[in-house]
Amino acid sequence: MNTQKLPHIVILGAGFGGLTAAKKLRHAPVQITLIDRQNYHLFQPLLYQVAIAGLIPAQVAYPVRTIFRGQKNLTFQMGEVNEVDFESRYIKMNGSVIAYDYLILAAGGQTNFFGIESVKQNAFFIKDIQSAIATRNHLLSQFERASREADPDKRRAILTFVIIGGGPTGVEIAGALAELISHVMGKEYPELDVREARVLLLEAGNALIASYPDGLRKATLRLLQKKNVEVMFNAKLTGYNGRKVSLADGSQIETNTLIWTAGVKVAELVETLGVERAGSGRVRIDPALQLPGHPGVYVIGDAAYLEDENGRPLPMLSTVAIQQGNSAADNIRRAVRGQAQKPFQYKDPGLLATIGRNAAVARIGGLSFSGFIAWLIWVALHIYRIIGFRNRLLVLINWAWDYFFYDNQVRLITRE
Ligand SMILES: Cc1cc2nc3c(=O)[nH]c(=O)nc-3n(C[C@H](O)[C@H](O)[C@H](O)COP(=O)(O)OP(=O)(O)OC[C@H]3O[C@@H](n4cnc5c(N)ncnc54)[C@H](O)[C@@H]3O)c2cc1C
Image (cartoon, rainbow, N blue to C red; front, side, top):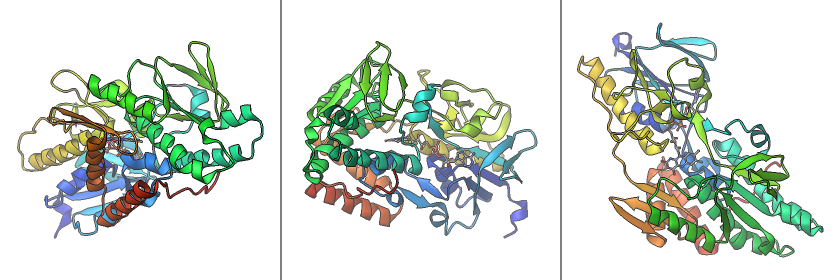
């Protein structure tokens, strides 16, 4: 095959959007270069399980080269892209220049601390494997510390875990952490009274998972409270010095642990592109997912800002990134054939969030579920969506073990 004449597609990012686009172009008459700073695709929706000692990183990540082993029209390059020149149509990766005919920018997002420097310095967050492992090490270490702490006040601060942000991630972590404490740590630390431990979920607004219907929000609150999570509404954080959380009403909470889940913004690279951006710093795109004024440059997933027919921004979710990956790939095929571009239309598959064992909330096909049925849907869907048969099997075995033996198996403190 003479690849010289084939249009060159550069896909920046092997996350949900980039990976989907690359797969969709498998049989297209194009040459693809897929670039990522990591050599693996990360299944971020299950990262919190790494943080709460439920799964190991290899079960939520998969090597990109393995995924594309059989795809002849694709080359993978691992590296950091630090410049995009839309006029001359090239990107720069680790100093080398890579020219493109079409570009799919799928660089994702990063944690947004909203400029609160003390939180950035002292809080834990869950965005990549490193941050999830750091959180796990810290959480587990607190029980070791508490077990040798004789001063009850200090012990209470060590065993107080504060999670900021009542969105799906905050809810998932709070529920899972409360269970880790009550189901596992109680057995593991007979010298500790784990009833001293507190899990606090702080939300600046007056509702959990605000984008969900009212019934599911209430169900979420009920399910969390049943697991002894203390939920505080209208609790606006102003700072955290590593020992005390300060709130806007002047109150303080003594804690060694703050987990920040309250914000996402675009990836660093996107902030340097000099293009028009909107909410969370996302790049404004046209309905066909292209950068205005730059046909052939598609921005998708968390990096992109597009509104639905009601004027609401599409959420920063894997479902959006996946559908946009498919759509961008289809539009590139059309462009290569000289056909008109097709606008993107998001098909909302519903909402789903877990709150721990036997507990989840779901809104699918106009129907709301909560409790065990929603949890079963969550388990089945996540097993189905993880990449690789081996990972699916291992996660299933892990979860079955945890379920029947009330255990979280990955309780290794690898570095504090
Ligand atoms: C803890 C957590 C839980 C979540 N839970 C859910 C959930 O339950 N359901 C859901 O739908 N969504 C969830 N999300 C959101 C979902 O993960 C994102 O919406 C989705 O990953 C966006 O896909 P993307 O392709 O735009 O970006 P990503 O999947 O983030 O991929 C971006 C890729 O670009 C690479 N990259 C970035 N910059 C560069 C650069 N300069 N050079 C080279 N490579 C670069 C990154 O390494 C990364 O691999 C969750 C996210 C997090 C963090």
